Amino acid sequence: MSGHGAPLPMMARRGGTLRGVAKVPGDKSISHRALILGALAVGETRITGLLEGQDVLDTAHAMRAFGAEVTHMGHGEWVVHGVGVGGFAEPEDVIDCGNSGTGVRLIMGAMASSPITATFTGDASLRKRPMGRVTEPLTLFGAAAYGRSGGRLPMTVVGAAGPVPVRYAVPIASAQVKSAVLLAGLNAPGQTVVIEGAATRDHTERMLAGFGADITTEDSDTGRVITLTGQPELRPQSIAVPCDPSSAAFPVCAALIVEGADVLVPGIGLNPTRAGLFTTLQEMGADLAFENRREEGGEPVADLRARFSPGMKGIEVPPERAPTMIDEYPILSVVAAFAEGATVMRGVRELRVKESDRIDAMARGLEACGVRVEEDEDMLIVHGMGPGGVPGGATCATHLDHRIAMSFLCAGMAAKDPVGIDDAAPISTSFPMFEPLMEALGAQFVRGGIS
Image (cartoon, rainbow, N blue to C red; front, side, top):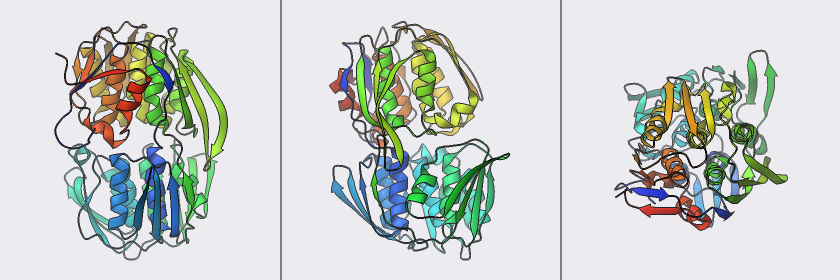
């Protein structure tokens, strides 16, 4: 699959069951951060298990453009020779981040406190996404940003010649914004402080500590307070990237709705700031078992077994859980369609500004498949139709969004009639092995639309 070029229609249909071991690729969030922090360290960082999807490859290209030496050794193994904090060179060309909101926002943060200028762009989807949420706090360091109306790409960021430390309360629950500010704080003297009212994924904090940064986190009446001392010399690391829980969500959730399914996903990351989906599924009655719990590279992991769960019930998902599962709401809405009763998802406004408007995309696709939904700006309610009860028989628009594409293909594995998508090509941005992995488990995909 390719994230660029001509659309690739595809459909999924009910066939046999799903059984086997699903070896999911490396965590995308950790992969981005490993490349960026490796480029900001002094010396050689070795990374194994890196996700080699297009989003992460675009970040690798960007780190080369900023002067780091980034070498692919094969099979998820990469070596990064970093230039040190404040050592980024000015790129000679525009930085194309493809489809990756994480990549572009973190890279903007990493270069914003250095006296260099860089211009960023991306694909049609990324150029629609708001960047002001990141560029506004970066200006506090002394950087400047010039983009299209609405703070959209293409955008030029002029880094601060004399950066100053910042104290910033993140107005929304966003790990990308928090991480961009922390990365900018690396090259600012003194202490940069980030305050977040709702805890978001903490991969950046964990990895900064691993690279030797002086960083602390404490809870207060105003939320989590993260304090970073600037201008450290980051030490190169050996990083083993765990399996991506957001990618694992697709074989796991497909197993829950396909009759007779039994799927094992080994080595899945279970960082508590990322595991909200699995908690939610268990509350719905999903048959999930966590085996061989352990820690790898500072991150908790386990082998996750998922079995067909015909007794799942709709629930109200606590809105405060949203930051721990924001990328998983599309596939959760598919599971909800095969549960009994209504699943209410509140506090999900952030889905409106992801790779697509994911609330709208899932609502329209589920409706086309015969499922009743309700929505408003900050909520999605899916009225479940029970095991095997979704009619299907529709082609759903993906809006260049990899998670929408994979979610509706999973729906097609359990619906009465096939479910098609207009374009499977964006799947390569995060999960390039999705198609062969799912087919090896027993999924039946057909390239081409519903005839």
